Image (cartoon, rainbow, N blue to C red):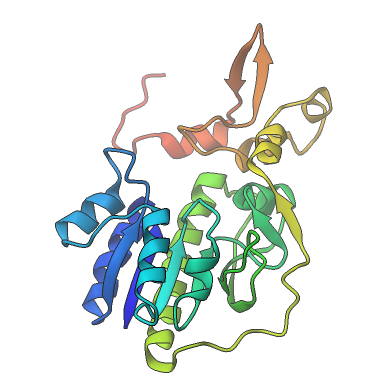
Length: 257
């Protein structure tokens, strides 16, 4: 089976190695190679896999009809277009770190905590030309505790689950080809843009008086990114509570006070 892999972050770098170890040929990688410290680009080059722009990958599929079996998107941030959607024999599959059709776009981890949800999940779906709306293949759910979770801790759990979902789905495609889809309308649900997510971080007067202030603080705690913040004299100040600070303490450190 021949694949074009689109992704970023350490998980994508690790999955490149895993995929090749399964006897799958990765023809090209599309990633955040514009950054010198891109782990996915570095790993691809170490494995002698060509690193292409999305446009170059589109041209490759057009010029080699029927050659590519599968395109996968794992945390890839750009909207994927027709050549990479319709060109592969077994389609283009996205791995989304949230439950579909409920939560599309950005802010999934934040919403899970803000909404005090009892479960979160990961989704594999075929890609269409709009964001996170293609036919759903599988949703894996797991329990978590919004009372103690932060966006950062929930991201870690979710990524572990997403890696396992990737492995399940890719092995099934290798065995079966095109996979069956769920009878679910993925055009429904809520889409949250990055702009909306950033607006949600602002601490308002109403938040300061709310018993759920700590929930909002934890929902956006994800250093080094801005957390839930107040703006004073044009400068942003991220709020943090004692419980979060306790998780940052080195267990081998002796308290001075």
